[in-house]
Length: 303
Image (cartoon, rainbow, N blue to C red):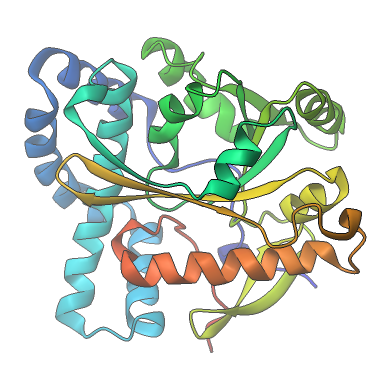
C-alpha cells in the first residue's frame, strides 16, 4: 500500500550539525547545567522554525493523548526540551561525565543470562527516551555494540561522533540504498557473539509494514527489523532508556517471549515480535509522552 509522504521517515534525523557542535563545546567549557539553561531558550526559537515537527507533536497530543489546547502547547515545549536534553546528556556521558548521572537498571536474570552468553543478541529499541546514553552499560560485557542505521542518518551524525570522540562507543552498520551488504555484516557480528541494535519504530517509503493498534489508533510499523530478528534466530531483547529525573535514567531490558522458542519455527514470528514490541513501547510512551521523538504523522489520523 502506498504511504503518504507525511507518514514516512526520510532516513535522516532532525537537528543541524552546527547546533550539535555548539552544544558539545558548551558542555566541555561551561558544563551540563549551563547547557540545560541555554537549551530552555533555544527551544522557544526552535518551535516556530520546525513547523513539521511541531505539527506532528500537536497531532500526537490532541488526537492520541486527547489533551486540551494548553496542555498540548506545553507538551510541544517539553518534547523539544527533552530531545535537546537527551543530546546534552549523551554528549556529557561520552565526554567522561558518567559519574554525574544516576542509572537505574531493570535487568532481569533471563536478560543477564543472554547478554553474558556467547551468542550474538539482537536488541530492538525506539526513537524514544535516550537509548544511546546506555552505551557504557553494554561495555561491561566486553562485547561490541553494532548499531544498524540508515546511511543518511549515519552521514549526518558521523562528524558529531568524531568531534565528540565517541565514534568508538559503538560500531555503525549503515544501510546503503538497495545494497544487502549490511545483512552479511550483521551475520558476521552475531557469529562473533556481538550485539546488533535496531530501532523498530521508523517507516521509510521502501519498508514493508504491518498495521496494528498503537495507543488507541492504527499505526504502521516497519516489518524489516522484526523479519531480521526472526530470520537470524538469535535472542531478542527489547531495550528502552527513559529520563526519570535530574541526570537520572532508567534502562529497561525485556527478553522476548519468542526468543529461540521452538527453534524459531513459529509461523509469522516477525509479527509476534512486532506485537510484543508495540505493547511494550505503548506502555512507555503513555508514561513519558514528552520523550517520543517521531516527528511525522505516525498514526493513520482520520482526515
